[in-house]
Length: 133
Image 1 (tube, one colour):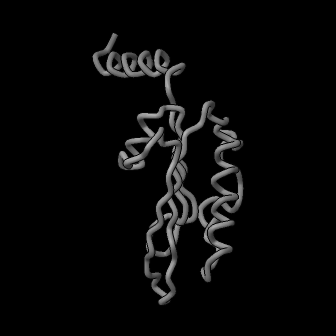
Image 2 (cartoon, rainbow, N blue to C red):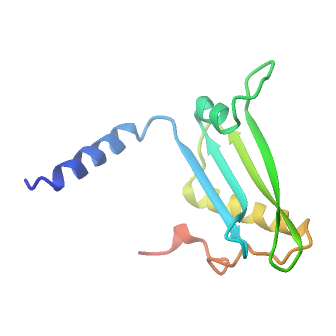
């Protein structure tokens, strides 16, 4: 077996072994003229991941999610607010369901601002998980 194949097999084996373990999905949609993404969603069934992604906030009980926003200036002089949502889930959705959720959240965030909707800028509104490769 060639030496280049061995590291790949080790990584592939580890990925299969960890497939049943905690998982996290990250989605970013809505590329703006600045290169920033309007919406980022981090969804995890691992509480430590949620704590870390939320910056280990002080809380009386468990942290199940957080959100943050960041205002940026667009080249045309308007301001856009980027949103980042982190949340815990007991079961991860399918990749397609997650992609749809993030995409529709992008439309919601764009509609609440005075910016052009960037949610179809990269994929023309087509679900990428359903595309045959």
